[in-house]
Amino acid sequence: MSLLDQLGRPLRNLRVSVTDRCNFRCGYCMPLSTFPDESKFMAPSSLLSFDEIERLIRLFVDRLGARKIRITGGEPLVRPQLPRLIERLARIPGVDDLTLTTNGYLLADQARALADAGLTRLTISLDSLDADEFARMSGNTRKLERVLAGLDAAVAAGLTPLKLNCVVIRGQNEAAVVALARHFRNTPHVVRFIEYMDVGTQNAWNPREVVPATEILRNIAAHFPLVPLEPSYPGEVARRYRYADGAGELGIISSISDPFCGTCHRARLSADGRLLTCLFAADGLDLRAHLRAGARDDELARILEGTWRARRDRYSEERSSRAQPSGRRRLEMYQIGG
Ligand code: SAM
Ligand code: SF4
Ligand code: SF4
Image (cartoon, rainbow, N blue to C red):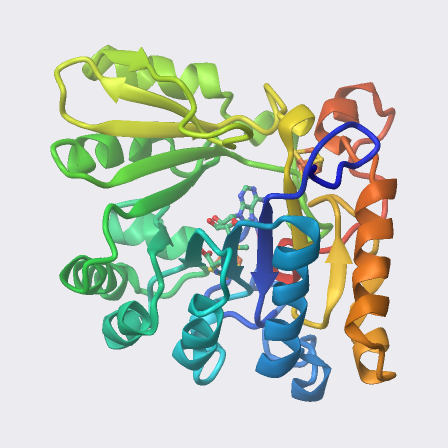
């Protein structure tokens, strides 16, 4: 019998941030104006070590039933020796899926080592195929070519089918939607279009900049007719569609217009060891303090189980009824990894 939270949801997916640092400055996550240098990031000693991460993940898998582990950040590939962590996690019995989300900039050098270490899948964020638009979205640096080289390296290393994440923002990259759909049709890769979310406090989120899923789908379907598909597993975040002509599949993540808290089976572990039971949490449980105070496995497991059992989060479903949706303290996306 699975451990269930207050709304009857089991824990299945654990997202683990391995760093809050990043080599991009996407305006919707870590804007250049707020993060001109490295001074605001966590000190290296604050980050969980690979030993600490592995120990916690083993407990999440053995005691809480986590089955999918996603490594994220910040930009996970800036964490030194990341393939060594992947190798350790790939050996944990009970992990069905070990994956990673990256901006792709360092992937050309690391794809092979990650695949050899046992990574099963990969998601690459790609907001535009236009070099200037991509540069504007990622913080005014010309990086598209390197990301596309990273994508090719991931394919060559066998990390396929890839998932490609595109955050759609009105007035910034709406034209990228059809361009990305066209580019990745007739490939095994799946582009997932994501509604711009009010995560964190730095992106000056404005609901008018959200392009709703229905509009994204309408724009694609005007060029390439779509057919809805069943979820591939319970609690899948993206709604799936296939091209009617058999040219592949795409996904839509409609966290704003059609929230999916009812089937949210995700927990998040921040790079400094806080356990968050919702993307919009104001704070998390400080597991690092327990680890470094010498807590035994059974004590840690009891704390994790108690936290999950008490969980009642459903922020996205409550968003529309809040008087001031962005007026509340919360953690940043680059701290908790999306
Ligand atoms: N740096 C890596 C990357 O960009 O792929 C991993 C971390 S990033 C925080 C994880 C995902 O969150 C990315 O696909 C990014 O596009 C998405 N993201 C960040 N801020 C977002 C926002 N405000 N709304 C929707 N998605 C967002
Ligand atoms: Fe970095 Fe990813 Fe945030 Fe962009 S979305 S700033 S790549 S952590
Ligand atoms: Fe899950 Fe929180 Fe997002 Fe709802 S708002 S889907 S509970 S992470």
